[in-house]
Length: 519
Image 1: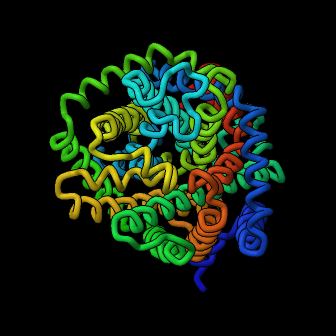
Image 2: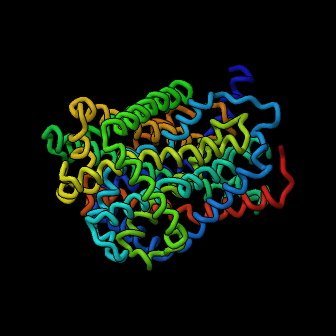
């Protein structure tokens, strides 16, 4: 073996202190779910309820701080900083970059909840309106529903992703630190934090959080596509159908991760976003266009009017059904994804300025979320109020994610649109999981550079493990909403890294406003 080859193999060794603890926890969870799924569900549920009831106030505060911080950084002179230095050249075009950032993140949630979530609020299906003083099934309830979706799916959550990505990219490309979560904390603790047990603990917790969050997203995907097959084609969903979907989706994202970013994630993302754009334009044209415009404006007005009340509500104002089960759950899963999603966003952002980074990862995805919910959510509310479709009945009978299929059945060319949406969902979940599986494998590999691929066996191993947990939780821990088990799992993952994310926020303040800037 040549000396050069030996050096190359040595640089791609497993980080045993991260890989083995994380893999043993994930593997044990999968086995426990098969052997005693009730115990796994109980542990996840207890973590879910305790963490959000006890630390809801902290989730709310840190989310607002992150929002303000990214706003200041974006529109100040700090926005001129270029990742990699003044001579660094970007690898991807703006459109491809945006496609990977959007679909690698939370685009799956947009499809899953754009028609379902507004209807759940509007109909007070799980008690969301109980403490708001608003009567369900009224025009005021419809406006509230749109406003709450705008709040949950726009600038605050994308600020979390963007902030983590910003600190990773800046520390790696400009401060020459390692490509890891731990490296983002060196402004607070110095180089010693990147060595020894603390580095392993921090990166392991971040890995576990996103693995659980990803399993949650995949599990919701199985439930969603399964409900579509049952409602649309009469194929009764259950463990067999969910297992088949788990195999298809897991195989898709594992193979895409295996072939790499350029051949896998890039192509999936480009394909995925084109379908998103097409569906959005099509529904805006064939839907109640004037109502969409009016309801979107009314929803924005109500959202902005109530922004600070909602942002500082630890549960006590809006109640658990609304705040804990929706907003705080959303914040928990965004935070679960944030540290490792930040690594992925950093990897694909070489050569870009901070301002460009924020436009692609914070501003444009937030605007896209507003437009998407405005079109899909307004149309769903209009059809419910006009009696065109009983979406409330569909969700009540079949679970929180099932209203989408009753909604789609009313669209012109539904026989064509529904299979396209099913394909889009599969590709969406695969794209997100693809990006995160690659990032997980990257974190578990020593001395890996941003333009190198982690070992293939790790991508396959993590992909299969995460797919297995997702299947177990959706098959055996559905609960009243059909996806309770995966919600518990995701919130547990978010709590694992809540305090790491808090430290990242403080670290960002120090590195950009106290320390010397590295352009």
